[in-house]
Length: 426
RNA sequence: GUGCCCGUAGCUCAAGGGCAGAGCGCCUGACUGUGGAUCAGGAGGCUGCGGGUUCGAUCCCCGUCGGGCACCCCA
Image (cartoon, rainbow, N blue to C red; front, side, top):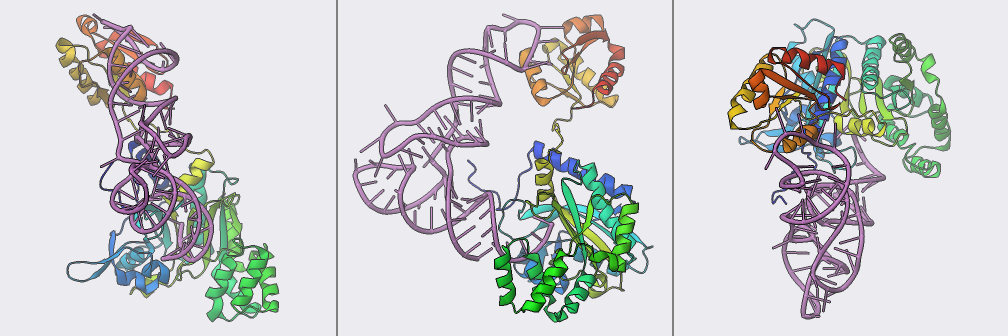
């Protein structure tokens, strides 16, 4: 029992979990680079003022880790990346060639109550396309999300990317008589539609001052799954998504509105198809943010995907790969004192040949050593005992099949490469 | 921040106001040049922590810390 507990809401990454984290990172990197995006990162510490400018009030005031540094400056552990991105771009927006396509993967902190799919320290993939404000740019971002899901083994039956547009939502709300200054209340009402029973929802609507006519209009709006067709920006968006081959993942959803204040156009969220988990990703277009933190106006669109919910959803739909946390390809057992030196020499030779080699650092029963190699999932063993040394040979055992052959020492690395090719790591 | 539920071995869980258990995992041996299977044995616990009630608390009560779920919010 540890006497010092880990910090609430943090996770220890034992090798097995770290292997999954790394797999996730590799998928993210592959997809990002496939679309030509460059990796970047911001600092983990930012001045609190940066977020006070534009993030949602609750995110800044109640959900950030905030502390004064030794000079009294108020510092926040970054709760999201977009303001840092905007700040970085504000300093260079005139010199960077556009469009700007950047992505990042790293840790974020939010002081929230931990529960399923939500921790206080988590990782996020952020990907953004800046310098253009076309519907096709929005479509590329949605397509990247779809490409990631596909690459991670999640089909359109497993996950859905739901899209709306704030300007469309604003226009719709005005058309049924809601003033724009009340739209945040209405967005909240819309957000709760699926979380409450119809009766509860209607009562909540009355409470916040929605009259019967407005309520009827709102219900019609939320039931209209085709409104995007008459809104040019979304119509072009969906056309482009279709052309880029991601149409089967992406759908219009009038209930998606997003909480962050800085979104100005297209907004999207992705959920598991059963709708049981939290949002896998969320994002949208933020055309005023860079100007708001002191730069030249620079339109942008992007999303953030969290590692916790993503892991849950991958687990749930059976897409979790079986990963080995031990990277060794070849295991070399240790026989006795006289042969120890040759075993080390062989290990060194094989490493020089580019192989990942692990040897047993103790002279003990071979059964124990092979058992260890088996538990670690190491596919091959290179056996160099007194007999083999005598004959200048090495025995190669395939631990996956149990087959063993003895060959001249000079042919060892070639045979190992051959055997490793035969059966890709399970 | 609010409400409800739960903390027993590394993991999953039993028991129950009176000696704290099982399975899996780990270690050892059967097996002195070869893993997976089987069998036998072993280690591992202040029953989350602190207080209270009691002759006696792992069990009942209170607090606290941690976890889960629903709000809130959000990745």
